Image (cartoon, rainbow, N blue to C red; front, side, top):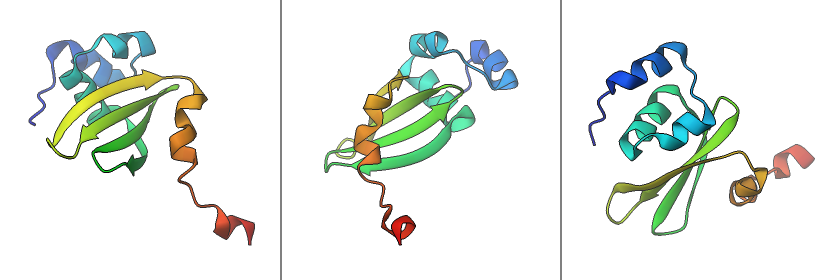
Amino acid sequence: MDIIMPVQEYSIRKNNMVAFDKFGKLSLEEKAWYLWNGGSFLMANEDGQFRYNLFRINNFYVELIYNLETEEIDKIRAFFSESFLTPYLASIDIDELLK
């Protein structure tokens, strides 16, 4: 998918800031554009049908859900709650740190 920077997002890109409520109102394509251009990728998990990509933007997290069968973005959701991080935290191997 080609993502073209929308005119209204220029100021967000220029300042590298986007508020949680503003991000939630963006279209799927605008959210994806901002993740590629302003988000920090943290990690990903897969469950067979979907790849869950976790990003950090400013003071909130964003999960991009990619459908592996259709090869398309299924959903992008933003959140503050650390409870949504549980699936990601469970996949972190800390054995080397405990030695």
